[in-house]
Image (cartoon, rainbow over all chains, first blue to last red; front, top):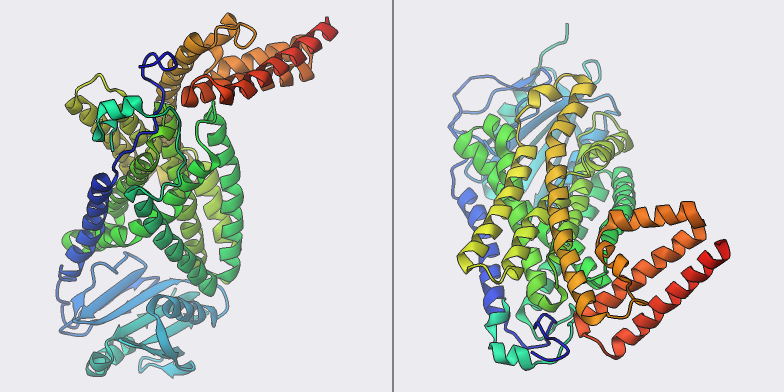
Length: 193
Length: 396
């Protein structure tokens, strides 16, 4: 202690090591974030779907998941969104009230997919019609390790927008295409009274 | 991280002074830079992606939350009574919250939500996912930033208040970026082409109604525990660790309660119910925040009075009756108010200048001891006092 600092309370420019503490902190952060991500990747997505059972998504929209697929518990949001997976393939279907332009939902979904999935190619959008009479717009997309398709159905009368996104690895996409088409074709909208 | 990591004799013989936050020779500095750089990249991508999907909503959100941050930063800066931290210290704390912590929290939170859905159920995920993921991931990551900043420049942290304020700024940075994300997500989830109304509603709810009891308070609470660990050297290590853990748990509990569906039935009862719900859940958080701030301020007062007692004997610099109010914002404001009534606005302004000059003098003394660095501050105090006395004489 000095005259200047009788109680030893003034800060001192003494060297000190921070690498042990930094290493501990880095390890804790990486273990926490990496551990959770790894745990999630290694946890199976959910129960197998019950064949031929119609699932309510929300806003009166329902569909029938294909047999052999599993519920995607991480995607499902009651009243808003439902999803199923099969190996690397996934299909999600979201429904919401929509009072805006019929083009906007697909455009927004396309932009969201473009920014999230590092795509290389996006097809031109084209109209489609399901066997049950629904019509909308669809667009395909592909990237280095992904191939997928978006479908948008906007029911202006009932003011509902439905967005379906299905994707898989390019090889697998061809294998599950029939299932995906069947699930899209099964979409129904309960008419409002 | 502690002073004991180098020998006590080395510390005692080292020159007196305070280091800046740029410390390229310390591993902690590079760890901070690493996470900040990754965070910056990730948050820029987030902003660009939002711009792709909802450009108008993104711009409005960016503008609103930037403007929102400014008075908050000013407020926290005002709480830093004696300006212990440099602007860079505040910037780094804000950046850790808004960049480093957000960047790390996104994948961790996503994983917890997904696990809640898979191991629990989609309903459990919707109800309790946020109450588990939010506090666990976010409180840990924000706290890690405060610890890292202390490691980078420990001499910058002289009192518990300095650690608490750093925590508050880390929390604020997180709060602002999180709210930006929520607002743009609301625009994406909108039920019409209008992107602006959902952003404005989010701003109203998350910014104006919930802003006072959010991340800034949670991290200030956990940072107080860290301050006890750092400064209560007389207590045993076990006690210091225990107290730090308790305050972290308190921050976790406040955050978890806020995010939980507890009392959500009130929220369902219309607009009045929703506002009541926000206040019922928010006020306890604010009360704890004020309690923490008052404890830190009390310790700040003891620290400043100690410095004044030992180093400032000249009453022309700090008069005996001025000492008790050095670190009390309320008393200082009351003194200015009384003077304004008695001698006018100019005198009150001059008293404010005198109070600030006195605090700057004490801060410099606390960092460097008496010497050349304090002489200029002493001159400032004398000058401010002369001006005040001249104004009072004129008034008389």
